[in-house]
Length: 45
Image 1 (tube, helix red, strand yellow):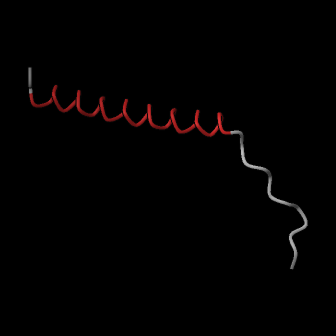
Image 2: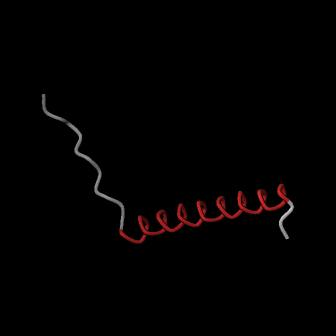
């Protein structure tokens, strides 16, 4: 069976790069938050 609707073209490179940078920044921020909370929990100075 043939597909009637073709796949959409890929997004522009700058939009894909923006998503990559945004996801990377969110993961770094989440890791920093977890590290900060662990430091508070164990009482590190």
